[in-house]
Length: 324
Ligand SMILES: [Zn+2]
Image (tube, rainbow, N blue to C red):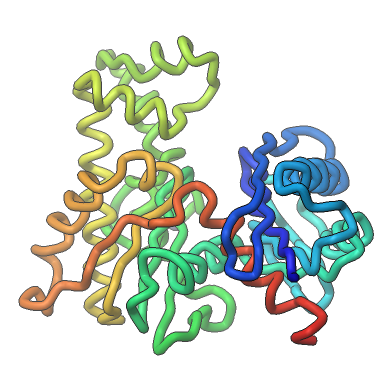
């Protein structure tokens, strides 16, 4: 009876799950990602989150068949290392993450890029299960993407799927990546916050930052954006509409090139805003879609917040000794 562990390592949270052979969740736990220290501290927090998920599942520490991890940065699954995970504290260099987790749980550990893991999860287990080709769009602090073609993840030479850096305005705003006019410069939650702060400096009124203070946060989280939209905040509406438009343009351009069957919208902000905003993205795509008589199906990610961690258990299953 196999028991797989999956960990989604994000810039703000570590989500761990324990699943059975059918990838049904038996236990889960979420810990904040350490903002200080270094890779060893992050690895300890990951082990802590997994132990809590194991507790919840009633599975012992040594009973995991294998563990999978979706991580930011440059992944070398063979070497078991993660390099340049820039959203994580002091993680510029190379860290042997698989070895550390493997020693803690006495199980093999598979590593992959977090967005690839989330795309594969929606393809194998989630909203895109009925399809053979897919574009995954993960709308959060940045906007990540993943591509599945003919049933296979397409990562090019390692850099494919960067939907957030598809150019939507060639002389546009500066993107957090340093380039000009990327979709993420308009649609990334980080860039949206930067724009909101500029607007406030220009004298515009908004309740975004009041809600942030009420919630005791220092950044505009997805929940804050949602709350401001519900309270009909004009600036929040304006910036979210602008983000939706940028996503629509980038996705339609990508469709013109790839013509995949389905587009799945996920990520923290995508999941939080949900179906009404998926519909808005669908509408924003239409004017730019070359084959507009047969648009792709545009769907909300169905695995929700656990998608990355559940997707990582697919990696674990590949690493399980029976398959070695
Ligand atoms: Zn960019």
